[in-house]
Length: 110
Length: 117
Image (cartoon, rainbow over the protein chains, first blue to last red):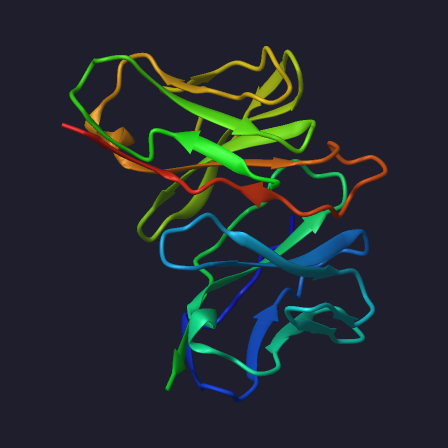
């Protein structure tokens, strides 16, 4: 599975959009981009995934560049409860393992 | 409510005393796995199971055993715990082992914080 690079930390003002970047320059054609988050020491929570098209659900939007070498997770109106560590994971469709890197620690500030 | 449960949530034990952490899911998921999380190392997979009676090693299996006798349960066994197994443990499950469900989300339990003295 391809390696991902994320900034270690970011701040965002409450009510503003949080844009979390992820680089995956070695991604291959059959690898999906997944995003999970972990609030404090709770179990990680699935947010969204995509292959090459932009995706949106009730939690977030995922923007994947045309060359698929990077992506951005967008939380449109961040709240204090969105403060968490966000993990970007690249994984083949039939892979068994999710490899969690250090992620980005997002702090939503009042 | 669809969920993954783990017990106990907190455990303090001593070196060498066998222990079992239980994991149960109510979503009829085929795939289950165990992770440990340590500061600076992220989540690392210990063992996984693609279905009943089918288990395989993850990235850090040493010192752990698992069994999958029923679809809903996937206990983690530490036969002789050591202090380096002090960690936060997560059980996870998802439907399918790939195949027609390549992108399904993984559900995580609440975690078990284990301290081995």
